[in-house]
Length: 428
Image (cartoon, helix red, strand yellow):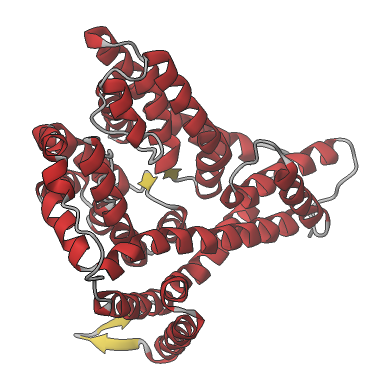
């Protein structure tokens, strides 16, 4: 079932990219209309897609996926963007995109497991240490609402949000266990801290009043034809949403590194809360770019991941994921008008994405340090810091979020080479 779902997911995502219906890369979405309306040729589109996506697949998606043995969605959908845009036009292109996309999805599942099995057979098994890469992410994910508030409303309100989240975390840690009908229920301290932080963040955002002097622009009326185009493709986009939700329910796929590491630890509810917060952050971006370009995203506003994380049955997850994706598309124009009435929520979208990125950069880098130091005390930190600072000087650096996982994997491979050469002894 896993191979079938990932094969179908890869095939459909590549076909949607080939037809210009949906692409995953936010930077590619505004370019698709240039191609569809004849202002850009196929070669230029393919080259742009490759330039925008390939580095993120190799430098971010794959390393983060390896660290958790769960596929980060970037790994597959950035790849299918490339496959779809490189495939030729017409029926032939749809067939090529579908076949290659399916092969790519299946190869990711098999290839990831193959690499994990290969690492396990090395003289020095470093996979147990690699689990430490995600440890700081789990501890830190509840911080980002405070950072959002600080970005949007100043340091003082951000600090208040952080302190309240901290107090709630500690209270839940020590008093969050109780009995109900003979069963012991324990609340998760990080999950409750995140929930409280999100409530405070939304409280501030909803209170922000719109600027009466600002010019009013009705995007839906201006780009009505492009909204109709998205709604016309609702059935196939619904199937796409269902496949993503089903893959997530099987713990095959995760939408971001935070929920990925929580899913790895079996913290599905906390992962769902994180995905829900991320979805709120993506409403402004997805709604605005979809309305203005007529191109949607294969994961919608990311709420389908919440479905997959909470529903264990892949069949039920497929049905509910398709329903959620359909509802998002049907409400596109309503959401756009609502965002105009609540400018604070609209601004929150950008700040949520920025805050999550900042927290992840620090947490994954720290996790890389912890994993590398567990493999080779002293040497591991030397290598990861070396990669980090040299990456800053590169003309084509990998994203900061990927440096920790990449560094930890590099240390794992290096110590095996040194062991064979007689220059390394595993720590006891």
